[in-house]
Length: 191
Image (tube, rainbow, N blue to C red; front, side, top):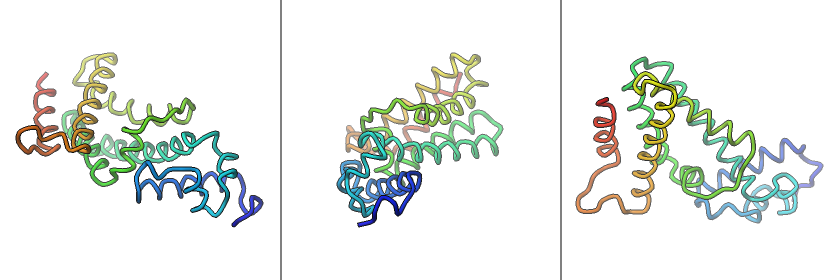
């Protein structure tokens, strides 16, 4: 076992977040327990609770990293694509790709209830959401409409991914998430 003095608080926070993220990637959100993370870190669970108020605090730290990574991807899409419709199609594809490539991180972020009310968490959410609203602004006509359209787009993407995740997307025939999102965007972007 490592001793507390072996790492600073910042190093312990980074280590706990990294270990928690690795557990989630390997085993899913249910593996994110204080005991599992502390064991992986080489510390006691008590040390973990000295860093985070509760396990939701650790989950929030992992989610912030996921959101920061996703936000950087959206920034790249916006930087390299000027056409609003193309931007939305690429943002939608990035969302589907995140769920496909990192299903457990996606589940922790979008399908696991977490009680987090920190400024850092809100900022991470807005770093993504505000970019989506910005991409929609030319198509929506106003800032209010763009924010509402962003919620509609996000809800649709989330619903498709959640239904796929739980094996409930294919009611009578098989449709891929990509096909459904393309059809939705074709209709959504006809404005």
